[in-house]
Length: 194
Image (tube, rainbow, N blue to C red):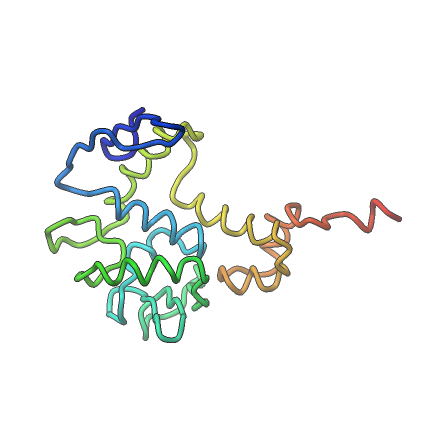
């Protein structure tokens, strides 16, 4: 089975293992894995993920590991309709961030520009993401923004109050209720029992 970024997997003793990995000078698998996990756990938009750093910087947000906070935009950057609000770092992501930070000497958390100092752009993650979607057999309309939708859906399905989901993702409560409310475990239960 061909996996993301030229990795060939084979099932051995009930587990999938990499049997061959083709190197690509532009990007390794790790930045894509980081991108996907950050997107799923935080619901952060893809452009903001690509600019997240290990410390405060002028071009994007950062993870404050001491305060356990995710700042989705750089300090001093004006708020837009995209509402890149700060949020707590989820515990499961915090474990991964500590591991990644210990192995990183770069500013950016998701840095697909292997050994260069090129500007990181959204385009640099789109092609590997599309390949991973195709190789996983997912619907071709899955995009990096799908990670944000998935995060919102999971939180609503877990019974997190709509207003908390909205605050965490930087949406309005009305938007969360309208788009994701039907995923709530108690959706329409009062009407059904009346």
